[in-house]
Length: 378
Image 1 (tube, rainbow, N blue to C red):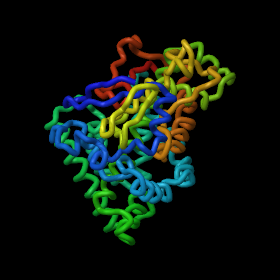
Image 2 (cartoon, rainbow, N blue to C red):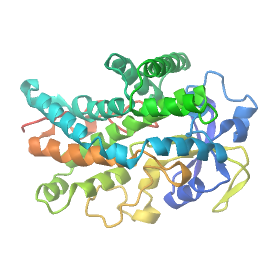
Image 3 (tube, rainbow, N blue to C red):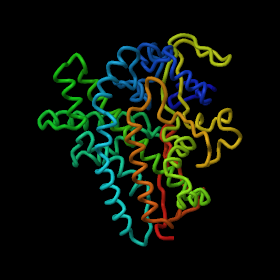
């Protein structure tokens, strides 16, 4: 655990040990509501144009605490069930087939798998799940990218936030005019049928949470799993021979390269002792999921190595405690379908650049690559 400075001069405790992080994530004395429990926010010491403001200012279950969190999570959990996710399986399979056909026609047999596979699959799935109209999808994607881009200036971040709200408010108005049995429609019903259950602000902010987090994590999971296979040929050989199943690849990828590297923010409700270090009441906490996945105290001296035969692949990449990710089933299903299909169609593909040339996205939150160029038929 170490103090870090975030963009805008905001400080927080970065918790990197997996057991420490799990204890804090499960501790009722750790909150996600800045209006109640973050001293700097309450005292006006966070800059008004702070680039990460959207991550803490939204009114949804992501930032709720106690009874408010239970109320909001109950609404979401009733709508976003494993059964609803499983019903998307045929659609995920068809989208995957369509993307593979597109890749097969790539000029020169070369493609950017992040742009042409890892990204379009989850964004198409989440847009279908929430009933996002086709015309809104390009601008929505651009805004979601902006939410995770921690290199934006305050002005760029504010403009991106305003555009995101406009798009999702339009979605709410559209779904009110044309009701449908998608998740946006279900959440709107929860708002309109009983306004005490979900406010208008909570409705829009919940859509921001579910659509943004609902696809970015899966994009990075696919990106990092593909990269791992292409940079670890001995591991890929085990999968290709059938000696190790794809679900082991998925879990080791989640451990080795958490799709969300660091997640802002949580706050100490009271002074908390963490192995002799005191997090004072009102101080901010940054959950360092990527570091926790490579905790040597848990995974040994080879924690930094990608090893699909590793017996213990424990990770917290889907969170832990009351804020555990409600979309984990959908993310795993998309990976379980798309990864074997991709490598089955192009079993001999290879990176088109040296691995050292792969550049990370401009974010300390999102953990993926800007491009993933491959030769499909090497």
